[in-house]
Length: 71
Image 1 (cartoon, helix red, strand yellow):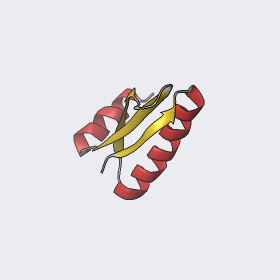
Image 2 (cartoon, helix red, strand yellow):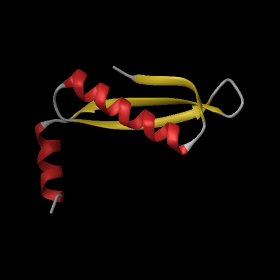
Image 3 (spheres, rainbow, N blue to C red):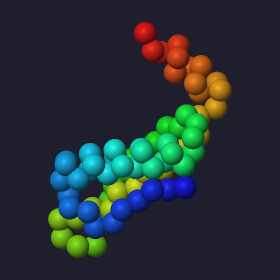
């Protein structure tokens, strides 16, 4: 499942709001540990961007590697 919004006002506030909402929606959908890659590209209208959040389900080895890095 890819979460995206198109023609969003190009501002730091809107990007942060999108990231928070996408994280909530994707975590609820997958109900297991995931990594999320956020990307954007210019929108069709002036001063807008298209935002995209692509999840990746983490494997057991991914989780173990993350635990080793965390102090």
